[in-house]
Amino acid sequence: MMSATESNPLDAVRADLACPACGYNLRGLIGAVVDCPECGQACDITQLLTRSWDKPWFHAPNFNRVCLPPAWAALSAVALLVLVGPMMARRATLAIAMIAAGTLAVWGLLWVYAWFVFQDLRGVWVTAVAHLVIAAVTLGLVGCFVGFITTGVSVLQAEWGMALVGLAILAGSVLSLWAGHRGERVIARQCIKRYLDRRPTS
Ligand SMILES: [Zn+2]
Image 1 (tube, rainbow, N blue to C red):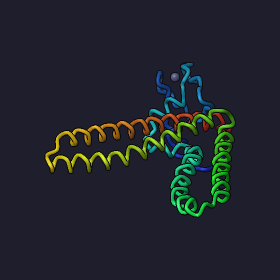
Image 2: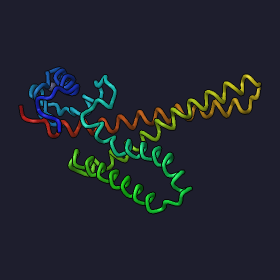
Image 3: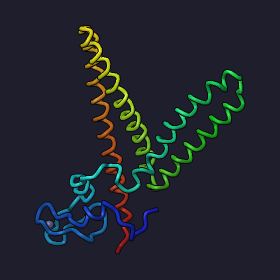
Image 4: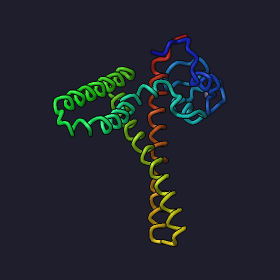
């Protein structure tokens, strides 16, 4: 858990926030939405922070905790592909079932942990978004590589139809990376909001 004294990139940005209406410094005011003490303007601190955030989204508080379930899912998918193939050949069905059940159990516990971090259902849907983000980024990176190679080889061999396919793959992959980045922003926004909600009165 984040302690009150732990320095956090969010606090640095938070300390410089000013009221959009009158410029009054909103430092030290508690909550996700605050009324400006100077002019009374309702200031959505989450929105202001998300706008002036200049670091990678995953630096947002608790972002990495929300990414634990999809990271576990991705790693175990790779591990299972490597392990289960040879085990299938030896018909070790019980062992495979036990490994699968254990993997799923850990995955479930990590979801519960994400729920715990947020203390409400937000933790669950934000974790679902994190799965989509990791899938989109992985797909985008692999797709960029495949699209680039396909296009390059096709152009060299003057196969223009395949070159177009390669370009389409590239475009789709860039779109996938972009969607992943948007998803990261959605997660970071909820993490920031959660952090502001529970900000200690110091
Ligand atoms: Zn103001």
